[in-house]
Length: 85
Length: 141
Image 1 (cartoon, rainbow over the protein chains, first blue to last red):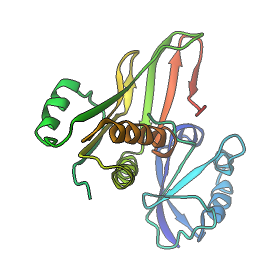
Image 2: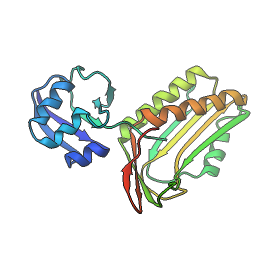
Image 3: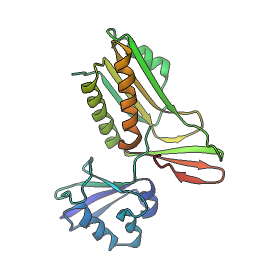
Image 4: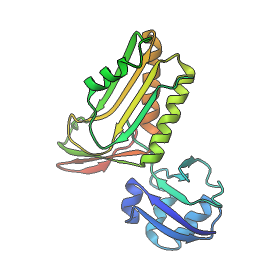
């Protein structure tokens, strides 16, 4: 599918150990991408959302369905529940 | 459609007096101005050293704009201003400012609460409390 910029925030950033990275991916949806990343290293298993819900945003749009297509996406962000205000 | 929507996601503080003075010029038909300020508070069982607020700035700004548009569609408002800070903040530092202006107070009150409820869990900010004994990411209660 090509190179995509992945961004990580908050607890996910701390666990993965970086704020962003450019990665060559094959997956065409969020669910498959999480599997693909997990194969790159155990730290990515945080994206499975066992300890807390994991949200994602594709090209700055928050997605709620992990089956959402990421074909053609340039940036995908992962983050835990938001706590603004 | 309300076109007086002002949104900022910023590291710097905001000054309430100058914000209020500036918006008077834009809201001559408004008789009610509701102001909400969220600030950093100390913890119950530990001493907070600082609060670190992380943000996904562009997305946060877009999400706030979207909720302001929703509020403008639900209530008859003259102006909405939302400024949310990120970075390292100390006890009593300002976090967020929401100002809603309307002809009469009910619309401004309701819109203010609606916007704040949304900000709590739908805008990409994350707070980490760093205290004497512990440090932890805040979870929504």
